[in-house]
Length: 340
Ligand code: UDP
Image 1 (cartoon, protein in one colour):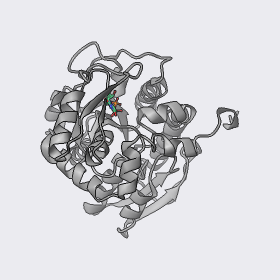
Image 2 (tube, protein in one colour):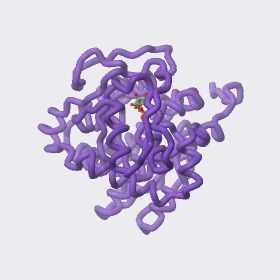
Image 3 (cartoon, helix red, strand yellow):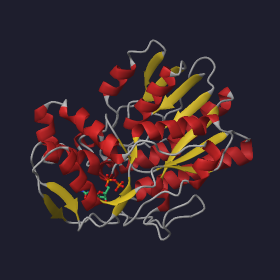
Image 4 (cartoon, helix red, strand yellow):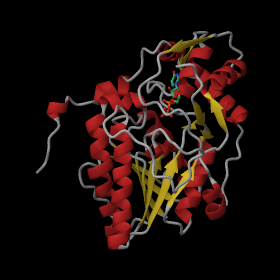
């Protein structure tokens, strides 16, 4: 296949690209590097079947030649980004998704969209299955992402209904592994950097909120199976093993062989209290379920972080990198051109 991946410099995007390349496909990676990393593109550049196009998908995208599959992973996705890149997020979830849909339609390609567990918001049902409509604050600090992704789902299902575009719709739950950004304030990388440098682990609130963490290789396998399936409704892709954030902190301290302690910090607003995917549908339709235990996945992620520049780890552990990529690339809101 000839595959376009928007967001190929991002964490999940680059792993998905790597997998498709390893399976013998040709991949055209597209990214504006607003939060994606050049190092991920360099990693993919080892393959001759990979080509990179630096492009912001809020502008129309033209690709020469045939395309069989368009994968959309282009969106800043961490709470740190929500604060700094709000306008960019809303635009990529609306204008950006439309341009990628138009590309897929013009090429007769399948469109694989990565939505998110955030469409369920601060969920009132537990675990969350695909039939749940969600509980989202439309004006809170997470709204740019949550509502952006909800709009994107409405847009792509409309392209399917009205224009017959073949779509695949993944709802991704918390995913972790090597090549996550260290500056985006995510819990797994924060805790690992803190544990490796002997600093206190920053648990927000009492740490009783829950998440369910999926290792990147399992996530990619789920997305590949979804792309190959005929199923066009939303499908949760995540790991249903749920833990509290305090438990996660303790596991990381232990696996890293660290003597760090846990320190509580204020809870961010609108932070979902629980999150756990019901993956009955993915099991049935894709014959998929996660295989990699948290112990193995966390150990691999810790080992990856151990090889990074110790100075960068120190800075990340102290929170000095938080939002640095997003802040560097965010435009002042008044500077954003609105095309009429
Ligand atoms: N969290 C934490 N300490 C940190 C970073 C995050 O306790 O240093 C918490 C955060 O409040 C949330 C959970 O960990 O409840 C997961 O946060 P993350 O930003 O990784 O993902 P999301 O909130 O989008 O699930």
